Length: 486
Length: 135
Image 1 (tube, rainbow over the protein chains, first blue to last red):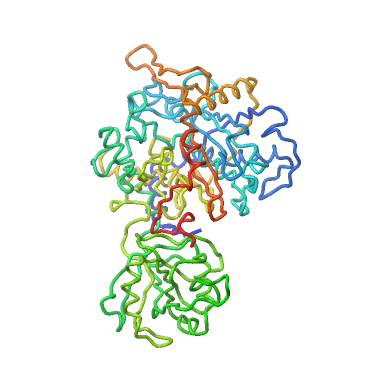
Image 2: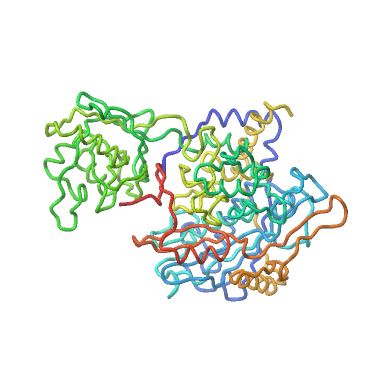
């Protein structure tokens, strides 16, 4: 996982303000979450199949482990939220759509939505709230007393023949799933959050309000192009912003205040200078790697930029940097910044081979035209930073590298960060919501944008390096919940 | 409240409260086996089956096309029972590189589309993400 910044002074200051106002005690309240185990005997949560304890889960049957993991995830939300009305969740393992190569892991959501209740407080009249949040605000059970507020269903066949059979639910509580494991707790945390209210009930594809009323989310979803909140702009504006890629933001003071505590500041940058830099001198936007250290404001990594020019000789390692570097390439990159073309093998492999040859950092040159993109993959043994630049920028820089010795090019590269914009927010610090083009029903709008760094619980992809945190300095889900009334 | 309070103080208090609240980790969960579990299962399964064919069946009551309900009076509560088309689905697939990828979508119809799509739509970003290119 990416390194985190924890602005302790800011949080201490905020805590002091909170203490002075006497509200910290309220935060230590909680909400009771009642799990309705609706599985029949011998199935799902009641499965008696023996299982070895794993990852802190002490259950000794499949059913026990499932229930312990579910309880663990529910307890995280129960401790984080406050309400006098218990949240009741129907839970079952059942057969869900599946094939050998793909399948539904689970589904969850609110069972009812409410507006204009007559007890407690109604912060936004004529506005839909999810069942559990409406109960909290009304302070009285809405609808039928004891009715479940959230339904949740999980695939009982996962890992069996014909259903993603090489995969397995991982019931450990430690977010340490194996390669073929699917972290049940992480999936639960994400889906429960949708059921608790991390969702607009307004259609992003048509712009239509549900039953003519906006959702509480629509008071904070903001169309940058239209300059207004979803509750105020036209249906056409809502549709346009839902596919605007970067033009849909969460415009609320609590999430915006929390964003700098969570999101990475500044953009990765390659600065080119030196006596031979010529026309290539300047700053180049760069994509970051999901492995190794992030580019740093405080500690730029600087060195002569030296290209890796030779493919390795092994038949299976024909790409530049895909195997141990040749003697000349190793001499060139030792103590310098390696420039390696993308392609053939995994990017982390190239970076590790350059590291083994003594490189201080690596710049990957894209091999196809396009915008700036990140470097995926993983290797916990990579200790040098790596960035990716576009093919066009690489061509400009490479033109200055022809006059070089075996160990120096006179073109100096500096790997660092530039600017103040947060990764996953717009220039005003408002957190971006997922608005891909074309619209992806479900994934769109009701998730944080996938440009957020570090990864957030409520991005459309449930990433493998989540920490179970729901609050700053690691996550923004709880600030959003607070904003809508939790 | 004045604007400074709402723009500066309230967010700070909220953030501090979150730090205190999440640190508590009190046990807050009860597990129950409802007497009407079979009925609850049947209603959910009916709603999920109906959603797959574009029909609306309430997840709580099993009613077909559950209506929006409003109690009498100017300020009467309004409620809407939801059907399974509003559920959020976690979908997994084995990608071309053999790795498992996961995505969250709304409704069974979108889940089916996600399962059969050549690949999950990705947004390449200039930041480090697991779903960025690995090659």
